Image 1 (tube, helix red, strand yellow):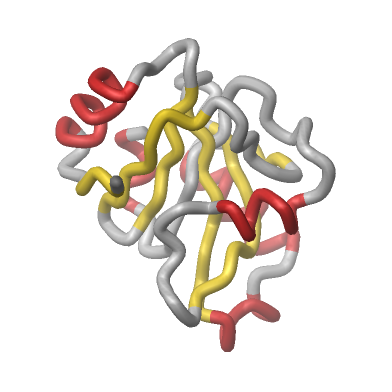
Image 2 (cartoon, rainbow, N blue to C red):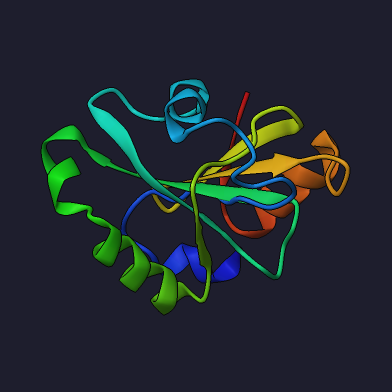
Length: 127
């Protein structure tokens, strides 16, 4: 998660079960914390933290600039892995940090441990 704080775009972490939902559209429509006018453009997971999943968001007007190559390049820079979607079923909460969103999932995290990790990364917990 700490590597994510260097990014300028919004990220949402992906761990346990990443990519097992059918398509990214349903996960994107359920993603907590996406600002009005922004869209989810991709998903990444941090191999060092199986309890988080990160979805990349950007202004809708910039969506076309976020092709697979650009997302892959960002993922390589951040040392994360691109995945087709993030699981939403076991999410215990979402953290907004440095313009990024991170979903925390059980069983690795409960609400309290997720909030603590969010605060450690100078994030704001989204209720």
